[in-house]
Amino acid sequence: MSQQAPVVARPNIRVVLFGLMIAMMLAMLDNMIVSTALPRIVFEFGGADHFTWVVTAYVLGTTVSTPIWGKLGDLYGRKAVFLTAVVVFLVGSALCGMSGSGVFGGADSGMIELIAFRAVQGLGAGGLMVGVMAIIGDLVPPRERGRYQGMIAGIMAIAMVAGPLVGGFITDNLSWRWAFYVNLPLGGVALLVLATTMHLPKYRTEHKIDWLGAALLSVGITAIVLVTTWGGNQYDWASPQILGLAVLAVAALGVFALVERRAPEPILPLSLFANRNFALISVIGFLLGFAMFGAMNFLPLYQQTVQGASATNSGLLLLPLMFGMLVVSLVVGRTITKTGRYRAFPIVGGVVMAAGMGLLSLLDVDTSKAQSSLYMVVLGVGMGFLMQTSMLIAQNSVEQKDLGAASGAATFFRSIGGSFGVSLFGAIFANRLADSAAGPAFAGSGGGEGGAMNLEALKKLTGPMREAVLGGLADAISHVFFWAVLFTVAVPVLAWFIKEVPLRATNDVRPAGPTPEDEAEAALGKAPVA
Image 1: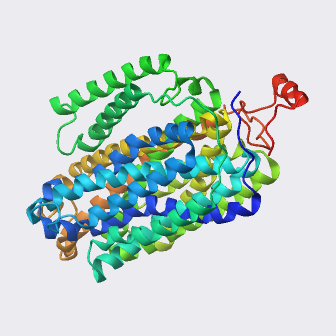
Image 2 (image 1 turned 135 degrees about the vertical axis):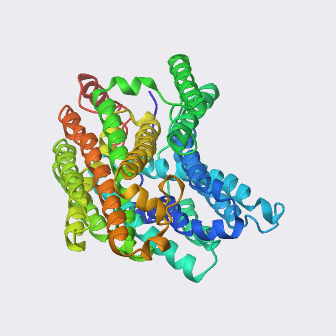
Image 3 (image 1 turned 30 degrees about the horizontal axis):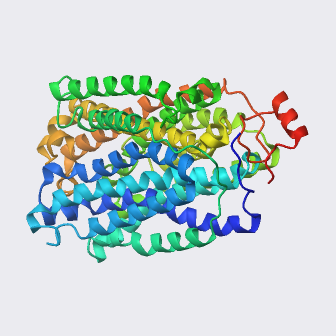
């Protein structure tokens, strides 16, 4: 049986948590800051036909690397692997800031350099997100973990709002390069704090990297992300490019499943999915990412077009959503720690989240900011019930030695769900807008190809044309939230079948829940000492 060192002393956890919260903030905040700075980057570099790759490269690097970082942490120890991820992220940030400066080539290659360096940055971000959750799993027993994961969920909520605000300030007052350079001092603090204060349990494992499995998984995930990114945008869904990528994804993941069955140390142990709770929470995570990330992209669009808010103010208008998510995440985390019970929270969260999506489907040109804020509070409350609870259930369903793989898988399914959601809801929005009476009017207003927003042209519209365009936009956006309801209602249905396995009071390397073997080992004195 694997052995672990004693759990870190309790007073050290708060200091470590501070460093982990900075690291998570960096990973969550960066993409939102950069999205705000993208117009300025395109203006300087040109290459507008490639600008979406600045975001896609980061998402691709993050999604591909997440399960791999998780498994590497299981094999080599989470501290060294996590600190490596921080360094990769910071190096990628510095390189992104230097893109097009002539350091690596001519200024005309700036967009290509930025895309390549964003992929490097995304690779590091994947390790940050899965590493934070897995490290908390190492430091804190499941019974007490909800409180700390609730704090991390709160950081995610803050990042959703702070990203556009910080990005807007940097874009308006500094060079866009500071959207990347701002990571360096914050990341340096996190690196110093964690390197000097974080002491994690160590496990004796055989270091056998499943390189073939990692390669097949990377190819499959890359193909899926490209399908969801390009489908309906650069290429038609029925085009040879999209169909070819879909076939490649299915083939790569099919062979990956066969390889993992025989690998001595699989990157993603398929045995995890034999656990009902883990399988259910993985599907719930996919649906959560699908509905949440997919639909939430349209809230700033509604605020900036229909409600006429600026880019910075649209970030402030998301505060009600952040407030609902932050408060409930903290309350739920403390409640789980106090009671040890968690099954009801994903059920309630799914119902409330579906209700929030339903309310947002009522948005129209006459909806006041107070009404839309109330709708966002409801959505945020539902997300608060679900965000940290889903990770807690995933971690409590596996042995401690597989904690990194489980954390990586849970993060991976949520990311893939978000990628699918953004693509599908984008297609729903575009089709609804094109089919509405506002379609021709929007095209005449200066709307870009594929429904790209031209806010300056929209502001100049008056009379019936303006009413038609705003009405069509509001209708198309509300239609997206209507479809999001259909996916969200499946969350509480699946959560109903989750079995409430008692949360372990110590970090051990055995399956969750008391068994006769547990009692026998305890009697023989084999249980690890905390």
